[in-house]
Amino acid sequence: MTWPSPWGRGVPSWPLSCSVMTAKHLGPSFEIHGGDVADSVTHLDQQLALSEAYHRVAPVQVWLLVGTLRVNGRKMSHRLGNFLTIKDALRLYSAEAIRLFVLSEHYRGPMEFSREALQVAQRSVNRLHRTGHLLQRRMRETLPLNGAGTAALSNVSSLEAYRARFRAAMDDDFNTPDALGVIFDLMDEVNRTLEQGPEEISLGTLSAMDKLLRDLAGGVLGLLPSEPGALVGEDLVVDLVETLLTLRAQRREAKDWAGADQISNRLDELGISVLDGPFDTTWRLRE
Image (cartoon, rainbow, N blue to C red; front, side):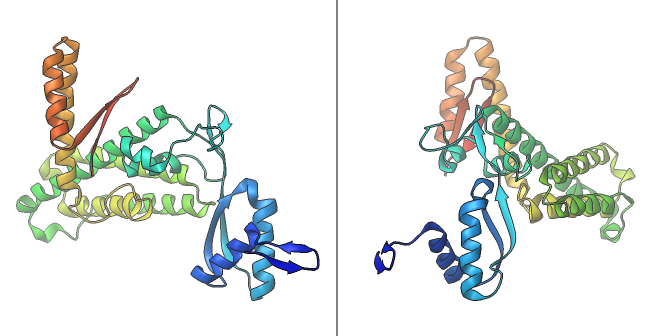
C-alpha cells in the first residue's frame, strides 16, 4: 500500500492507521481510548491531530493510557523474551485473578509482574468467591426461618457508605487499588455478619449485602459473578478440589508418593490440572 507524493513514496503511518480504524469501527468520536503512556507524546498526539483535523470533532472523550508492565525491573517485551501471554497465564490462573492483579496497581503507574503476585491475587479471588458462596448459602438457609416478609428489611446502615467510597475511588482517576480496598473491607464486614446466629440477622440484610457485593465486585470489576446463585456450583467445586489437595499434601508430607499421585491422576481424569509451584500449589479447570 503505497502512493506517489511530492515528498517521495507515501506509506500508511501507524497514527494514520489507528485514526482510520477507530473511525471505521467506533465512529469519528468515541468514549475511551487505551494505549501506552510512553506513546502519548508521539503516536497518540499524532493520531489525535489527524482525527480531529479530518472529522472536526474531538475523537476521544477519555484517554486511558497505562504504565509499563515490567519483569525484574525491565519492560516486558517480545524482543527480550521475558513475556507471558494471556493465553499462557490463563492456563495457570483464573481470569478473575489476572483482573485483580491488574487492578491492584494504578493504571498509569508501572506494574511489576511476578508469579508470586499472581498467586496472591488468585488466593484473594478465592477468598472473595468463598465469601460470596457463604453469603448466598446463608440466604437460602434464612428464607425458611424468617420468611419472605423480611426481604425488604436491612439493619446494616453502613452499606451505602461502601458504595459511596467505591464510587469516590473510581471517580478519582480510576483509582482501582482504593476501590479494591473498599471491596475487601466490605468482604470483612460480610464475614463478621455471617458469624452471627440465624436469629440475629434478617434476610433483608443478607440480600442487601449480596447485591452490593455483586454490584461492585461483579458488575463493575468483573471479579465475581454478577448474577445471584452463580457461585453455588463453582464454589462447591472449589471446596471439593481444595479438600482433595489438602489430602494430597498430607500424602506428600508422609512420603506416600503413590497415594499423592493417585489423587493427582484422578483430578487430571476429571479435567482439573494441578500445578505445583515453588511457593504454592494451584489448580484450574481445563476447557
